[in-house]
Amino acid sequence: MVRIARVFGPSKIPAPDLEAVGFTKLNLLAEKNEKGSVLTTAEVEFLVDWAAQHTVKALQDRLAKDPDKQKKRVVAIYLTQAEYSLYRAAMMKFGAPPVGKGLGGAGDGAHEVDRQPEGG
Image 1 (cartoon, rainbow, N blue to C red):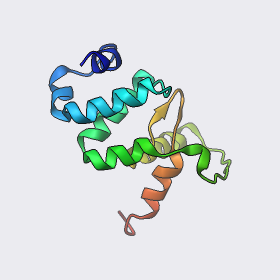
Image 2: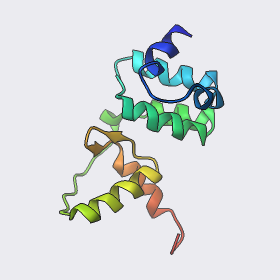
Image 3: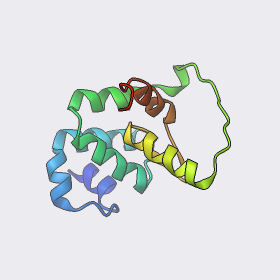
């Protein structure tokens, strides 16, 4: 409980929203934070919302990803502010958490967008 309070205390997430997520998921997020992946307030808020909509197993899988072991490719695109706002909203909708002014795991979001049916 103390671990959860340390991680979620500084956030602006209302207690009823945290209670709705449940102890098990909050504990997983707090544990991740203690293992060196210090989460920003924006990341905590995003992950709590994400966790509320997914199973404990899905959250465990998301948190267990080891980005150092994944092959990565960089794609640079230039977007207007309006285009970036649409891109950011879409990536966050499909699982990319906000990190600073950018996104973390945007590739995961892109994979989810790619799996949507045409027009979806």
